[in-house]
Image (cartoon, rainbow, N blue to C red; front, side):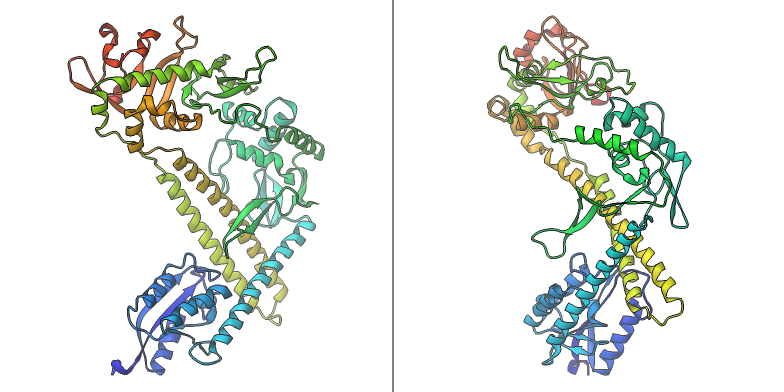
Length: 579
C-alpha cells in the first residue's frame, strides 16, 4: 500500500522555544501529518530547526541538511510539506532560490496552512508574492521599532536594555546608583584634572584598590581602558540621551550579513534622568579626548617594527616593555628606536622607577647572536628535529564566542516572537494601547541586547584572529631554527618580531647595562630546546642565563662556552637555564 503513496519530507521551524499558539513544533507536525494522511502521502523523514530565525538560511542546519538530502536523491521524495511559507523562510531571495534548487531535483513545496502547492501553475507565483510581502512586513516592523526608539530618545527616556554603570533602573527609568556613581565622578575628575589619559585613569583605579561592582553587563571587577573610554564618551552622565551611537548595518557584498558600526555623529537629547556630572565637566573631557584621539602619522621608517616589544621585562616592575621612537635630530638626521617601561610615564602612583630608554639595536643584536650561537652547534640541528611543539590555544575565547552566539540566537528568537505578537495583535483587543506599548518596550530591550552581543562577538572574533595571525606553527619554527643564519637576516622586522614572539616567552634584563655592553640577564623560551652537553648527553633547556657569562661568549658556538661557567638544569618546571 505504501508503495503507491507519494513520498515527502516535512520541515518545521520555530524562532524561539516560547511560541505564539498554533506555531509550536508539535502543532506544526500534527497539522502536516494529518494533511499527509489525507493526501495519501508517506512521510519518510522529518527535519526541524528549533530557535532559528527565518530571515536567512545561515545557521539552520536541519534545513540545509534537508536540501542536501534532496540533491543526493536520498529518499526519492516528491514534496516538502511546511506549515506555512513563513516556516520555510522569510527572505524572498532565499525562499525562491531554495525552491528552485528543490524543483531542479523534481521536488515541490506545499504550504499546508496557506494552501499553496508549487507544482501547480500559480503556486510558485503565489510563493514569490507572499515571500516578498513577508520580507516587507519584517522590514516595516524594524523601521517602526527604530522610529519608536528614536521618539523615546527625543522624550529623554531610557531606550531599554541594561542600565549604564552608575545608574539603576526603577520602573523603566534611570536613577543614580550611589554605590557606582562615585567611580564615575572619579573617572571624570582624574581625566580632566590630571595628566592621566584613559589608560592612566584605568591604572590608577586598579592600583589603588578600587573595584567595579559586578552586574549583568559588567562581570570583571577590574577597570579596563575600554570601560573608562565608554564612560567618558557617554553623554548619559551629564543628563543627556544619545541615539544611534552604534548602528547595525548590512555588510557590502552580502545578502543578510550585518555588523555593528560606531557612528561619528549622532543626535543627543535632554534626558529626564538626573546627571552625575555637570555638562561643563563632560565638555572638558571631550576637549581632552579630541586632542588625544588623533591618528598619529608614522614619520619614522614604515618598515621598522619593535621586534621584542612585550617580550622584554622591566627589571623593576616585571611588566612588558614596549617600543618608543625618538625623532631624527638635526645633528645626524637619524631616528632612534628604544624599548621603555610605559608604567613610568603616567601619574598612576605605580612604584616602577625604571626610567631608562634602552636602544633597540643593543638588545635586538644581542639576542640574534645568542640564537645564532645555539643553532651553529653541530648536534643542535639533529636534536631540534625532535619533538618541539607550540600551539595557539583559543579554546577559552572559542567557548566565550559560543556563549555569546547562543545569547544572540536567543535574543533574535525572542525578538521575532514579539514581532509576530505585535503583528497579530488586533486593534479591537481590550487594552490594546497598553499591550502594544509593553510589547514595544520588550522589543526595544531585545534590540539593545542584540546590539551589545553583536559588538562583543565582533571583539572576540578580532582577538581570535589576531592570536592566530601572530602564531607560527611548530614546523615553521623547526625550519627557522635549522636555517636561522640564512633566513633571519633576510626577514623583515615584522617577520622577525613574529618569530621572536613564537620562540621566546620573556627576556629579563639587568637594571643597568653591564660593562661588557650586555643588558640581557635571562631568556626563557616558549618551549624546551634540545642541546648536547659536553659529555655528549642530550639535555632539554627552557632558558639561558647570562649572569656568569661575558658578551664575547655569545659569538662562539654553544659547545665552546667556558665549561666552568656552564650549568644545565634538566626540568623546565625547576627553572631550566643554561650557563
